[in-house]
Image (cartoon, rainbow, N blue to C red; front, side, top):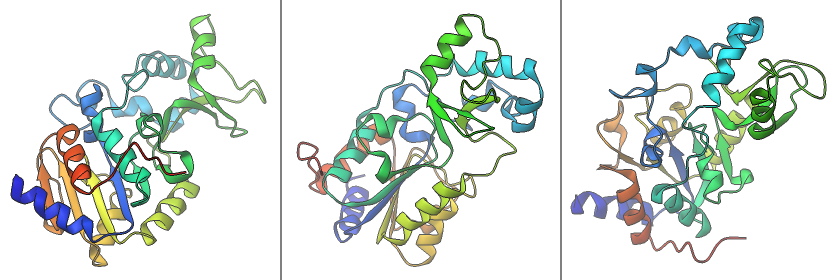
Length: 258
């Protein structure tokens, strides 16, 4: 492992602008299961329970959506050392941006400001109106649901509300995709953390950069679908490996970027 760490440090030390791309594996140390592992979320729930058309068209389906969502492990989780390591890298002005597939909001909770963060699949701690686009924190809507509103509606227009995450049957938000690619175009290396690079179109971002010749460092427990693209690869717990890597790069979380 020491050789792999030294190689990753060598690769990233030459990069001025690192695109950090994260997946579910960065958040498993925070108590959030991944999606496709043996104990992943898709072994416990049916993906069809998060289908856009059914949510929009069926009040009983929405009632079950709120029941599941408000008990979600995404809500109440806290950042772990891997998230703080990403923040340290950002604070040292070494990142082109942070792009995440996760909906847990933990990068923002760890201090990455929204302007430097793209949440491609949304944020479970927000609620969105599908009619007027109004967004609000989950807490007020949760309070209304617990007070007896089984199908809470938008207070601005009366439209249907949903968790502000990408459901099956939805496309990725165009604005966030554009922002992610802008960050990618500014990067001279890619650091993938906790992603198997199997979910598209999100995974096309780091893979496209690797195909353009940008160095690709992968930190993940277990193999990914595209290890052949990696310039360096660290296999193990991101909460252990990433702080070690970032420390070797000289990033100092005590000196936040303004």
